[in-house]
Length: 518
Image 1 (cartoon, rainbow, N blue to C red):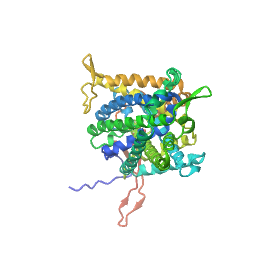
Image 2 (cartoon, helix red, strand yellow):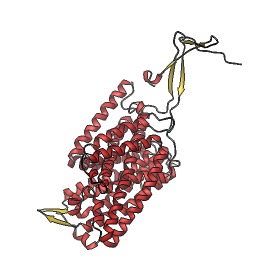
Image 3 (tube, helix red, strand yellow):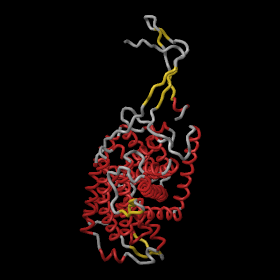
Image 4 (cartoon, helix red, strand yellow):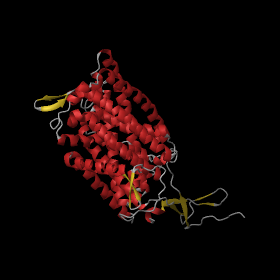
């Protein structure tokens, strides 16, 4: 039977529009390159910042932070495989608690992503100064950094596959160059007696300096969140995410330890004007790895400095790209869960990426680049990262208690049994350590404290207004995954005629969910 129904003037009908999902395109190489681009890049500015406070204990501080990084990585591996969706820590907190806690966690993490984009792109410009000296001076370095962010934002709008392939290409070049620096450092520079004499217990560093150094050193280990945030785009998250976490940890701890030992052997700690300092921080604070290259003898110095500049530019470009990916996917999660206006999370039909989120948060990062101050950005970086890590540990422990039967393809080993619930020891230790580190950041880092809390308050204002205007609860979880309804409004009068005399009815659409929220 042929359906002869035709809309009449004034008729109203509803059409179901299902949301476009992110594409599962990433394997271990793509996940590793994205995470390593975020983690491995920070050594190019974090080494100098940590050495200012930790001095001769810088290698030990970075190693200690790497252990906390491993504990956090295991937490993310369990959470991301149990909840393989965009959102990372925000998804864990939402499942364990409610939408309000999830928003605060995600919004703090968003600050971390924006700083990653800004500080990495700005540092790219400074390392380009080896080839073009004008690039290392302000405001040229800020303009170059903004141009890099704009280019990578365009690449990401074209799709995650293109972005992932770019990452993998740059990571291969980076690791080969970084290994070259380490090999020359081991053969020509590292001196164990010098490293021992660099430490002056109680004075260089003092306890306060050591705590400050530990807190800021965590900026060197912030890429695991990116892996968790890409769980919804991994082809086999239950296997690939844990392997990626361990692979990143093994790579980073070896390279960071040897690079910091090389730097402190080349530039020993000494007393100058009643202060303990190192030429690493006095001369190469902005580009400490370049300082290692300049410490090499003879022709090695010329060749290696050239390669280090290329290395820094490539890995920091990867980090900028990873930050853009992370921020856009986090915004996708927040919009999908009605924590931000839903227009931000819209996915482009052709390339299936949240293009509006890429444009918005890349633009905010460009505003940060204008500051041109690496130390301030590092403070903000630590504030957001420690908040996210602490909430990740707390959420995983809470899920072990609230949902012991939740399917966990990867489960953290080393558990203690309390009231018939398995509590992961590494999550307890990691959560306490990252919480203490966050408190140290709040207490000792003025810019991190002021700007960090201001960012949270602004976010809460946006969240509360959005929830109130859309008649949604502030705390309770809003159901997700509901189809979107479009109401088709037919005009009361026909607007045109077909040649054969039949009516053609033009119609308009409006988002039915906007005025009638679920």
